[in-house]
Length: 232
Image 1 (cartoon, rainbow, N blue to C red):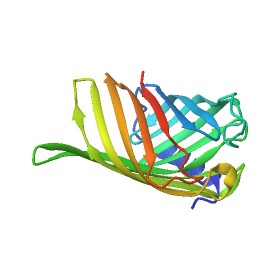
Image 2: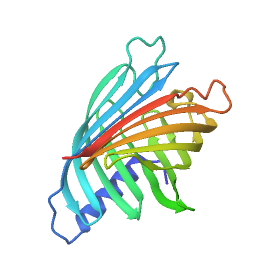
Image 3: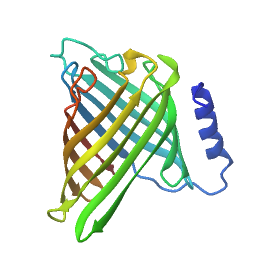
Image 4: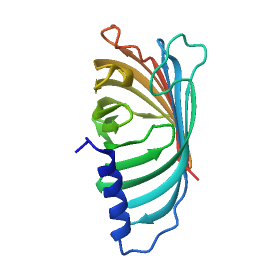
């Protein structure tokens, strides 16, 4: 299923073409994620997507992506390699609830295709606000390898709504990653403790995560994450 990027793109485009509903007006999206990794410095990917066709749960979009690695780093990650600006043409289809199929053709030999799934649940236990969150993804980057990179995590924590705009989440997390090639990232299994601050403003949000692995080794090097995203 994950061996050929063309399968993902053809499937997505086919689902868009065979739809009979008229296209709906859609808003653009911006997403930016910066990860601090001591070995590589600060790794950033920023994406802008502009839907050009949306039919029911499927959409076709164009956009741009910027990948950047902190120039002060003494090492490099093959997925970033200092600075890259790429044009993007892609399709996205919500298969079921939060299960989504994504295919992107990117310049600079950075095309990718795969599946991702994630959701968050908020609830109270004896008046204590809590949340459970999960996310999993499996992506093929055929310019590097025909086998997928797989990552998944589960967070369990407390949720404090300090104001209408600000949320604070202390949490515990289990994180697993599998990669067919060390250039695409290391295999790792981690149990973490972390703190996440979320600022909400309309359709936009900014998140800062600081986390620490209980067992320190060469693969447990992620320490901080900053994410901003929204629609316009």
